[in-house]
Image 1: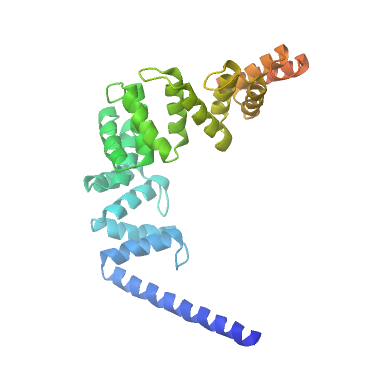
Image 2: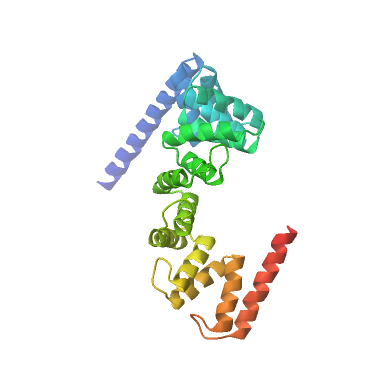
Length: 293
């Protein structure tokens, strides 16, 4: 009975293998005959190794064929492959050109990397206003990274008029999609209350999330300060010491200095000048190293 079952499984596996082989052969034939959808699908399959052996060069070859026929998603993918050097050599100039083509077809994903190139002046003259325009378009289409980027530009007043309320709005949207950077700056703005209504309780919750789930050493530091000063939560020197220790162990220099003070003064922990000296020395060494590099 077991032997029969094993033979049946092997037979089914062989049949599926032949079926997939036929599908791929048919797809290749269509692609070679210039069928756009087949070229794009084949490029995707080779990129991810789906039903075929993964091959970046073949992925690039077929993606380029599809892009040259005006497929917006392929234009974006080709730009990405040029930017990252996948299946071809890195070529930022060509990456920008293909991102431009995809963006002109209103392909949302292409607008963020293109905006980033204008922001940094990569193979194009630096242009904050152009970057902001592209980021806004992509942000409105739900691209998390673009939502964070335009929020940051509103906060800094780069390419747009400085406006913390708009920064908050876009940081919120990006944070809801899981961007740690957006959560951090949202928490920071809500804590400071600069140009927006101060909300230390919300700020505390955001810092706690980042400190706990993302192991963000800077968030751990600010969370420790909030416990220490009773901002957004009750004063708790034990929790302050715990989070300051976490941040210090993850090499955040300000936390290392603060942890030294906590040991010297016995805040949240028994006084221990020896451990205070150790953390003071560690902070000074890291600060010197950071300065030199």
